[in-house]
Length: 446
Image (tube, rainbow, N blue to C red; front, side, top):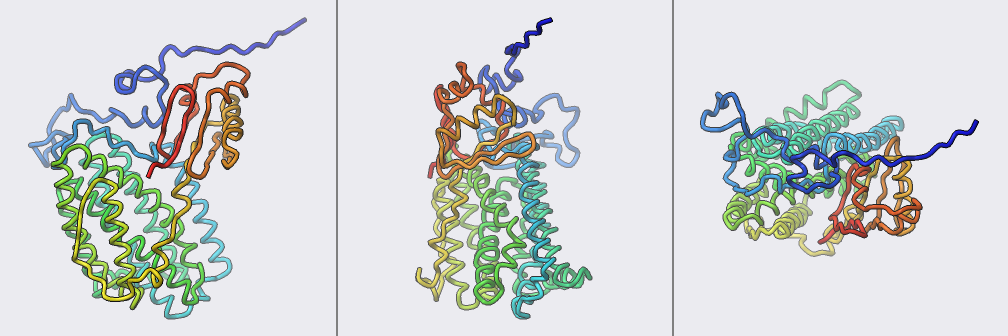
């Protein structure tokens, strides 16, 4: 008896959903596209919302920003639920290992008392700030238009809850799980003078009704000042004054999250500003107002955290934000903050620091027989690439540039391969995409 085993290739009856075909053409679509585009309902509502009878349930008029197509806001991370959960799970694994390492060796007990007190006064109250950020991003998700923005905003809101929990765990490590440090942190947040301008800022943001203005106020301005000030400059100061890398280990999630999140926030501003001169002028007006106020709000924190290095750190934070705004097409000048000391680059070496992770591009594929040939081809064409295997998926990352070439994949498969078929295996990518008939190239364009 003879048995012949043959492999047949089945041609799908259709490449994707009809609404995705109408937007992108009749070709295989990525999972991000299928999960994100034209999903939000726009017609056939049974009633108007009782709390705002002049609006539809999903209404474009909840912001003064005007767009021809609200789905132009493409998340550069290409997060839909699946990729978001996988990414955060990986980050959480790292954070859990760091917490376990610090707790097992009781490293927080090695901190000098003055540094421990500063952590109690400057890091633990951030759990209340993160709760406010969660509220704001829930508002953005509720009132924005378009699934691409709605899902990214609710992911952002959940991230803020997660960071609040990590901050709470730092407090519990400090007080031996009594909760005393968290009660004190609440008192500091409510009553200590250094926090009152920040609290005023965040509470005023709660009453904003334009969701896009709120996105700029919370996710661009306030995050753009608080995160580098406390998770970069303050942590470095702690390390230089005998604290080692303990705090940096416990806040690595926040640092990695901020670097990733700025790509999405900057894309939102750049897309809106590029749509029209009216959008650009409105964004510049909002930014000038809230940046000046934000600098005033965080200055007491900077002085308490860094002493005579505060002005230099604030100046760097301001210039970094202005540089990001300029790249987004916004021209904003502010004279609200005038540093009076320690402004030379010799005294602020962080100005020259470059985050090397920000220049890495990556592609994540489902793991199957065909994708293994794609991975092998990528390794041939990109000898500098790093391949990481996970259950049911594989991640390939490389510095600056990564190419998938049709000819190389065809050679590894032993048959002619259509480059568009990569979308059948694609989970997510990181980087600017240049896609043609012969190559699928990822790179960051500055």
